[in-house]
Length: 140
View 1 (cartoon, rainbow, N blue to C red):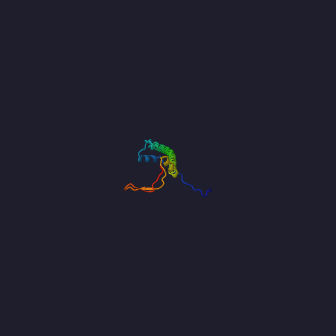
View 2: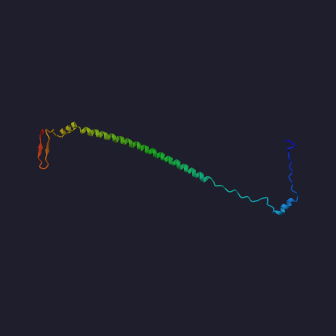
View 3: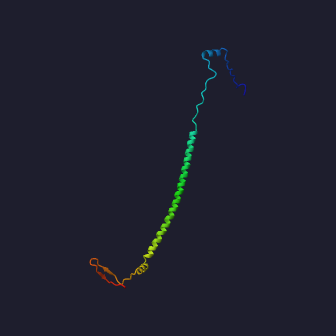
């Protein structure tokens, strides 16, 4: 910095000896010590943390129970599907047995086992008077 650009500032004024007496006369003397209140306690975070932990525990318990129930339902579904498959197979077996017993050859064999004979002709019974009409014949 050069000497030309430097500025001189006046020195700050010092208070005179009579200045403190004048200010003391104007204001009452303030005590050097004063009572300070304790800082106000902020809200504690313990209830909030406990509520959060309880919610987390409840959510985990709910997830565990839901998972267990889903596994149990899965086992029940598996058992029911096997039972349904077995019942479906039984129904197919019974249907095949019925079809086999209803075949003409099987019916003729069952009739001869009961003592029935094949008919030579066809006849009708008139219900009003009980007369047999048509070709009636039989082996006997």
